[in-house]
Amino acid sequence: MRIAINWFVWLCFCLSPAWVFASQKEIVRFALLVGNNAGNKLDRPLRYAERDVQRLHNTLKDLGGFAPRRTRVLLGKDDNQLTKAIEQIEQQIKQLRKTSPKQPTMLLFYYSGHADTKAMHLGRTPVAFTWIRARLKRSSAQVKVGIFDTCQSAQMIRKKGARRTNKQVKLPPQISNLTTEGEAIITSSGKGEDSHELERLKGSIFTHYLISGLRGAADANADTKVTLNEVYNYAYQHTITHTLFLSSGIQHPSFRNELRGHGQLILTHPRKSFAQLHFGKQLDGTYYILNKHKRTLAAELIKKKGAYQVLGLHQGQYIVIRRGQRNYHVQNVILSKGQRARVQNNKMEVLSYGSSASKGIGRILPIPERPQSTMQTALYASLGIVGFGLLSTGALYGFGYQQYAQAEQSLKNSRRDAKAEQNSASLLTGGHAALGVTAAAGATAVLFYMLDQQQAAKTPIQLTPQLASNPKRTPLITFVHTK
Image 1 (tube, rainbow, N blue to C red):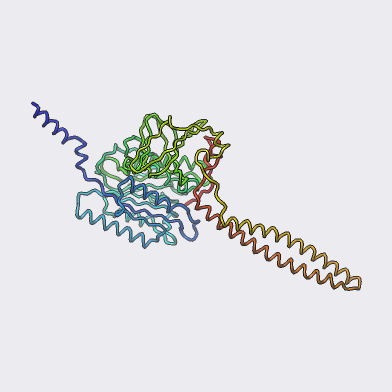
Image 2 (image 1 turned 90 degrees about the horizontal axis):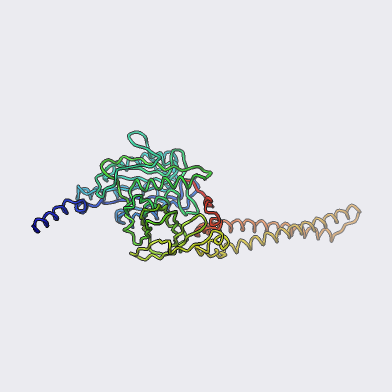
């Protein structure tokens, strides 16, 4: 009897979903990530397109199983280098398919930069949307995913033979093994819309929420896996909310799904991160995770009560902030490699908005004042010379013309005042010289100001006390750049 029971248990285990999952081959993932700040000669250079690529690369490498040897990152490159990278990845995929015909494969293409209605702008070189779409479609990979964070990116989505939607999408329940094939395209904006990057985020709005979602914020069913449609729904909701009050217009991400088969495509596993931040079922609200040393927003999470969520992060020191009706709730977290930390209400310090505003945001996130740079010192010195030069020029011209008038009056009286003539000539010459020095100092001041602004742009954005004074206020936006 015992032997029969053991055989029955073993048989059930062999036929169980867990055993089936263990026997499935893991999908091999390839990625080509392209970023270009420059655009063409008519575009205003972007600041963070290439940085967004680097952040996405780290996220996919840490949580998505995208091995470095199967990933290409192009920053500021042209169409020739893009073509070469596509051919290299395609050769890798074909080689894998040749040696392992049944091995499932996926290719993810991401672009962040300028574009118009017809092409992406890789520096001075345009790359047509139709060309990149055709290359994706011809790829030997079983599944192709394209993500485009650029203006006019909806041109990548055509109605013919596809399902196009600006709304949230509902796909069948996800399964662990990949039995899907085809292509899917996600764009950061709708037809005729601009995509935006914000100085406050140090990146684009859409990619900020894309990365937050991939790190776990988009895990709607709390299964510690983030699927394609989960991350799209998350980025869609929050991109629209964030751009709702921008004067440059609302940004509607779009999704085109031509995937055929069963189940959803899993993009990341937040639990595979080097360090994890866990949010228990009892927690509720909007949480901002700030990197303490870089002083940047690492992730944003809308947490609903009853759901257990995990964010995958790099090791480091973080500050978790939850905004309430009247207070901030703040918890300092140190994440080491392989460590898990929990966000807990009883460990969060409560700070009122009033006290935070009066003491500055440094009460929560100590931010020292930016030290005076060499450029600022030179700027102030140039401005001082300009001020002194203007006063000197005015005085010299004033006294010079006074002496000139005195000499003219002497001539009218039939007598010549040689001393007044000499003084007038000397003073007016001095005035001309002072005016030249003032103009040169002014030009120098403008140059030092521009250099100082460039240096300041490289400094991490600082949160302002005004954000702390009103929890319902729309976040301040210092710069908005469109793609």
